[in-house]
Image (cartoon, rainbow, N blue to C red; front, side):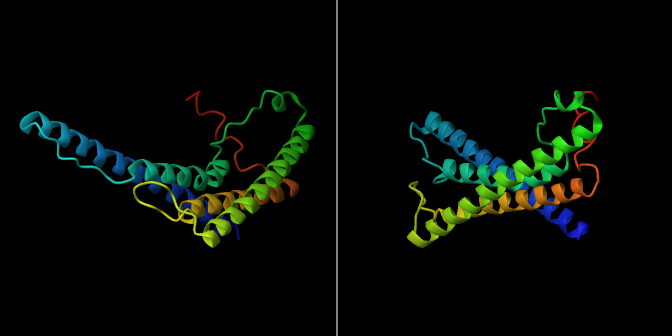
Amino acid sequence: MRQALNTLYRLAGGLAASFIVAIVAIVFVQVCFNLADKVAAAITGTGLGLTIPSYADFTGFFLAASTFLALAYALREGGHIRVTLLLGRLPTPVQRRVEIIVVAIALAMSAFASWYIILLVHESFEYGDRSSGMVSVPLWLPQLPVAFGLIILTIALLDELVGLLRGLPASWDGKGENLLSE
């Protein structure tokens, strides 16, 4: 089970990274098109009019997908910002209880958000909602990776809570705290 969950988190993180690469590719191509347009306008007096239709919409959709798909992976790897100023001053047994409470609250919030994004995806699919850009995209398509990301985060938080309740250390212990001191 542990291997399957770790694979799920890594796959979601890899998919998030691929959406970032797609953003870079789209923006790079559009910048090249803009440059070609300026050069053509300088030489001939008329621009070429090259553009990727709805490129801003697509990069926005991809940014949302990459952000939400990366949440579980970042949690497990200690990439989330944690404010440990108060936690670090508490005795170790109290620290553990506070961690459990905080993870339980985060789990409840993530489950709540997952439920409502699933309802939103279903509603967008049912009513045929579409984006308003030059390329009209069914809105459930860009909403789906957001829903998957939140569901995977909820699974990761449940995984974390079960581990903490069993006495295991948090998966992020020692991973993110020392990033700036290296």
